Amino acid sequence: MRLLLIADTHLPKRAKALPDEVWSQVDAADVVFHAGDWVEPYLLDELAERSARLIGVHGNNDGDELRRRLPEVARVELGGLRFAMVHETGAAQGRERRCDKAYPDVDVLVFGHSHIPWDSVTPAGMRLLNPGSPTDRRRQPHCTYLTADLTAGGLGEVQLHRLPGRG
Image (tube, rainbow, N blue to C red; front, side):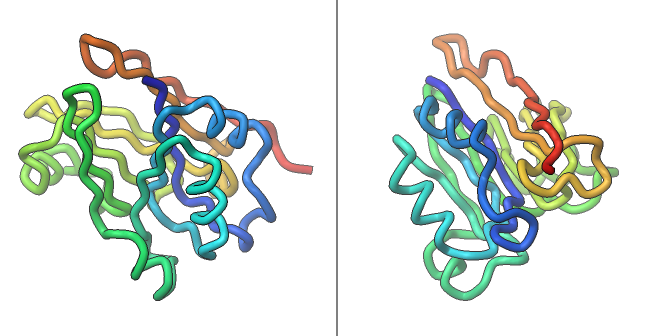
């Protein structure tokens, strides 16, 4: 099972559209995760139409309509792994222990907010994944997203993709 993880798209404020490379990954994915800060609802509609399966949450920059349509925390079981997704997890320092306490029944936690890619394992063994942003690199050298494969043995390779700079 192929997973695509994106967050912090901020459309149309930070970019006019998702990069073509990301849309190609949407087409190839069995499940697309979006960890919030969509900004405008039209991307939710486009991703829902084009994705085989879409899982999303709202972020701190999402207005009333997105908050009505999306949960703060999403939970799903895929391939025997328990996933949760939330936009914010707080400061980087202490994140692993905070997340272990807040999500004791989760194998993989997807989050966004910082625009900083993150891949770590907590003391309790939970995988924490932040894809960064495909449209707003902020202080990062590149815009980014993640892909991952679920295999019979669990979560396979997680790959960080760096996007070329915009115009």
